[in-house]
Image 1 (tube, rainbow, N blue to C red):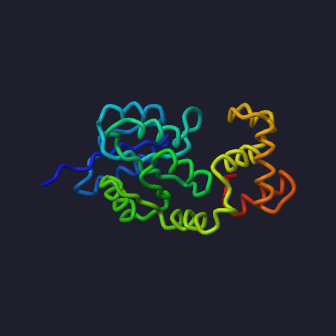
Image 2 (cartoon, rainbow, N blue to C red; image 1 turned 30 degrees about the vertical axis):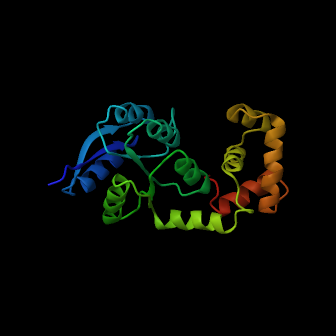
Length: 210
């Protein structure tokens, strides 16, 4: 009999972790070896080699974001696979996670059998994407000229959160001129002429999270 797939559950909500544990404990080839309530703790635990797959939430309140933790975990040699498990399916969230090295992206409303299959797929070194996520990525590939880049999505997400160009430049370590340039490209791609219209259009198309 092969060794079980060792899992680390990283989510700041105890109820969510308990629910995941209840579902995954029912699988004979899974072993939940650790839990983390913060992204920083998940990074530290993953570095010890204790697990094969990390189930990673994206939002942890204050502190490190799930995508940042994913990048930190996957940057190490022989790192465990990271399967993002979240409620968010915006392009901004998906691209950030995939570019950070996530081996999969699943939504929290996935049925138990889909979650179990995704864990096994990720553990085997293959990509595990929720159907809705795969569809959004395919749409981006079909119309690359109209798709917002990762950086444009980051800028627009911060515009949606009410940040000024000056604050965005400081947050992303960009010049204000570069921020303005990104906004010009965003407006052109979305067919709008204002910050408010850009945020409204991007939210309607689930490019950013509100």
